[in-house]
Amino acid sequence: MNFEPSPDHLLPALDPRLELVLLARTLWHEGYDDHLAGHITILQPDGSLLTNPWFLLWDEFGVDDVVRIDTAGRVLEGRWPPAPGVKLHLALHELRPDVHVAIHNHPRFAVLWANARRLPPCLDQTSGLGGGRVRLVEEYKGTVAELSHARIAAAAMGDADIALLAGHGLFVLGADVAEAHLRAVAFEQRCRVSYQVESLGGGVELEAEVQRVLGRAKFDGFWEAMARRELRRDPSLLGSPPPS
Image: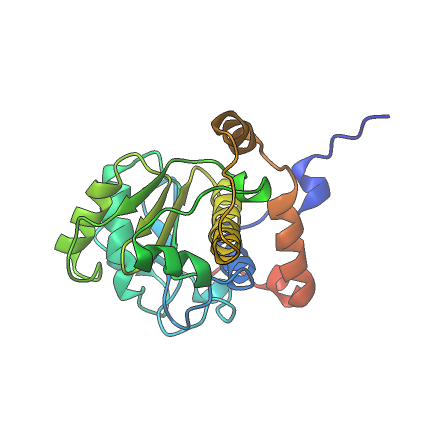
């Protein structure tokens, strides 16, 4: 007997604000935990962006803390300001209408490769999940909290889905929350495993065709499972009403 669960079997329908909260909390436990650093944007049908608030940690903010901004970064809804570095997202969304979800942080092992200005090899199958084009971005100076620098960095990404920002951190893009989440988790594992194997003398990268197959795999249910874990940790999230 084949069982093909509907999304409702795996996770109840979520308000986009709750999706953003769950995405931040799931990634916090994957090493996306550089204190107050980092920002997420989720594009809305009207062209506005939901983003996490400044001053609150990714494992701390709730649904009513989520901020809605316009494409210039002005707050449309919310009681907090957006993170200063959200300018990187503004520049990126302007250039890439295909991007629905954008994640930036300084995860523990991705930062090592960003600082070394090298792309980590894909050595194992889990590290290959999520797929996407990966690029090292060095074509900017200063910080992406300045819009001019953010625009240079976003342009240098081209059509990449994952970018290591040299001397800075990681930027992960996706067409939806599940895709962005999988890419973010898998790429941080790729960075960690590659670092550990290199300390043993190095490994052998997976063949290109194997990487293509893994990259096309949806890994159905993964996002939902991790979101459920966060809801078990904090059941009150399901009862949090969106801001009026």
